[in-house]
Length: 244
Figure 1 (cartoon, helix red, strand yellow):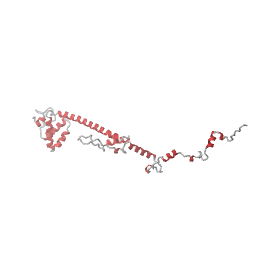
Figure 2 (figure 1 turned 120 degrees about the vertical axis):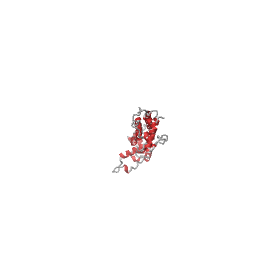
Figure 3 (figure 1 turned 90 degrees about the vertical axis):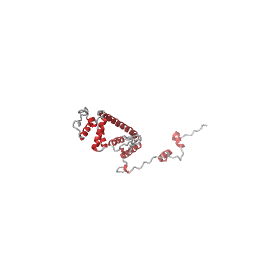
Figure 4 (figure 1 turned 60 degrees about the vertical axis):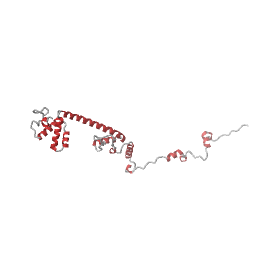
C-alpha cells in the first residue's frame, strides 16, 4: 500500500520565513510598533543626558533667544582665565622675587602706572600671555635693564674721570676750593656738592673757578678761563689755592 504524503497548501508556511513567523509566540509584540520596543541602553542614555543650562538674561537677544556672539565671547573669556590669563591687562601681578634689589638695596618695585608698561601689558593680554609666563619674564627683564643702566653709568663716570684728570696734579685741591667757594656763596655745603656733581667737563669746572674768582675780587688775569696753560707766572689755581 502506498504511503500518502501530506500536501502543504499554504505557500508561506513552506518558506523559512513562514516557519519563523509561525513559530513566533502569539503573545509576542509586533516589531512594526516602535513604541513597543524597549532598549535598556537607550533608556539609560536618556536618563544621563546633560541638561542644557539656563541662559542668563544678559546673553539673550531682544526676542529672548540666545545671543550666540555674546555666548562665544563669554566662553572664550572663560577659556582665557582657565589658561592663566587675567581678565584684563591691569590684573597682571607684577611682583618680583625678593632678591631683585634697586640701586639702594631695597626691594625693586615696578611702577604699574608707567605708560609704556601699560601698553606692553595690553599687548601681552591681547595675545593671551598667561601670568606664569610674565612672572618668569619680569625678573630677567629687570636684570637686563639694571645691567644696561650700570653700563651707562660706568661709561659716564669714566668720561667724567677723564675730564677730572685734565685738572692736573692739584685737581683735588682745585675741586675742594670750588666746593668751599660755593659753600660760602650759598651757605649750604650740600648745595655746593650738588652743583659740583652737575659738572661734567673740564671747561665747565674752569667756569666755576672763574665765577668764584670774580666773586672774590680776583684780578682779570686770575679770572681767565685759559688757565690750563697758565697765565702770568703761575697757573690760576696755584694763585687761588697756593702750591702746598
